[in-house]
Length: 455
Image 1 (tube, rainbow, N blue to C red):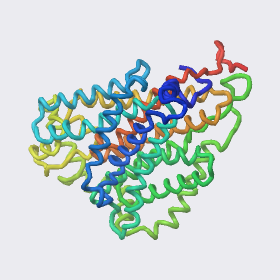
Image 2 (image 1 turned 90 degrees about the horizontal axis):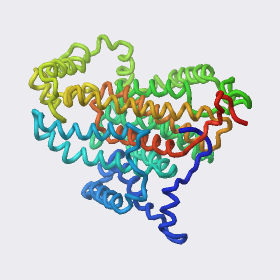
Image 3 (image 1 turned 60 degrees about the vertical axis):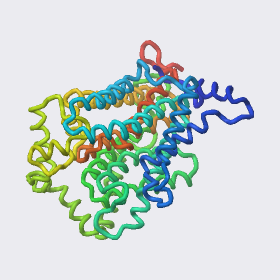
Image 4 (image 1 turned 45 degrees about the horizontal axis):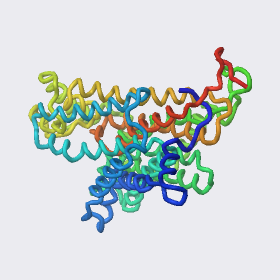
């Protein structure tokens, strides 16, 4: 793959346009909209918030429609499996191993329910997003549907907040809400940095601020750690490309915008000022939980029976006696049988390791590693552009923000059983789709055999 002229419309999109004829709608339009709606329903959970919708099987209707549409338009859409995108194969292997785990599950009911209910939804969402990687605009709108999903949760939560820990009990609990917002904040920032309209940029910056406030008020320390790590990742490199000076590609690029050191100083100064103003306004419980992040060694999670460390120990000790694992959805039973209180793992990696064994955790970590390498490779090639276009600048920012979402979810997932959350897998699918899209662009790096930029 190289870097050069980037097309916003692929051969697949043009083919579908010819199929529809000059005066007809794109035949994929309905599939696109069904995808956006499905993400809002599963990630935003609007059905649980709006009472009038709660009795309607909207998720099932959306799923049936997209499955039918995929069957009809399968040949118009790009292939899912590609040699230069191995993450797709590892995602498929992970789904297959989850099904296989039913054969050695110690708790057949939850294992069966997960395989028959949640796994099909996750699989359809991932497949759907990967099949829509033929054009840039649908991928952008999937990002947008994620931002809308986050606001559907955060805004009502903030409006109803009256102290304690922010949560919409009917949908997400406090920690789960923070985790979901962690993974979507980079998407909102990507829009805020790339939109042409000033009003739109301000809207997305405002959405980012709303989500940050919501995470803080949840009091979720895992969510705040995820926010801090992803924030530092973005500050170090927001993703904008710097045009190379004419001449040697490896020469220092022309200075465009602020340096990383300047950004760090300004962000730290802004955080100090905002913190000094906002700290006295925070609820007592929120301040206590934030302060406890500085003294985690004395926290209940370390020594007490219901603490996370003890939950992890019980699960891993049990795994040593049954290395194959205990089956999908079985962690609470593992905890109970080993002296616990029927808790889930509260750690995404421990959850996979105990339930799916060494095979499961290796597949899962390899999937994440493939995504990271794929995005990092695209970033390296994007940085070789001598004069990136506006579209290439936009895609470079989204690439960086996808990495930030993976960082946020990974860090926050150290404190949550978040392996199978819909928002997490939408981010994974977007990363796979983005890699597939960019790999098909046939971009030229503007370098000659000696590593010099071609004029």
